[in-house]
Length: 288
Image (cartoon, rainbow, N blue to C red):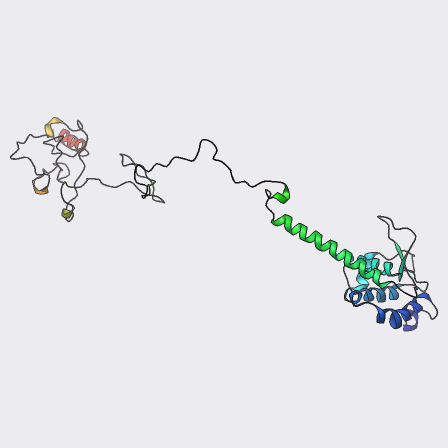
């Protein structure tokens, strides 16, 4: 297609519209409309219109869609709708027929000798204000908590103590100390390694007396409860020969494990560990 075929014919509506746009309308157009690129939309409409000024295809005579106009003007559809409506307010574009939802409107160029640019500016400013207000409202709704007064709620803070008051504090007179999380020392397994305290691991206890004797090179064992050992492994000592609790060299040696037995004042004469009693009994049975 040649350049002569692309250009509007001399004397046509599109040709006259282009002359008015270049020589009168754009020079007198307010800066707000130029910043909104309304003049860019008008140039695109002039190029798309047929000689009669209608924005429709020449072949099937269907009106141009907003999507087609936005693509020609280099803008998105939302801005194109706003600018097109501003041009209608100014009187330089009009709608042929009725605009209905779901139906493509037919737009046409309008030769207004004195466009109302102030009405176009007022429309764009109003749309901009409404959109900014809606944006701020959405932002406030996203930030506001569900219990704020704006949303008709109340603060979740409790005014008074419920369910019988605050939980009791079990200090036992030691408010400044922290309580451990491990169970009390008992027989059986120990809890696995992890967070919290662990029960003490004292397999043999500590010798009675000063802790300064911790460098003794032996491992004392805990004696069993009363009645765990046979009477045959108990010897009675008088006060002169009884083992000294503070002197481990006087403690008796267990015949099963050959380790010293820490004396127990509740069971005097104990010479075998409680844990060694079954092994010693088995050994005696086998030897018999």
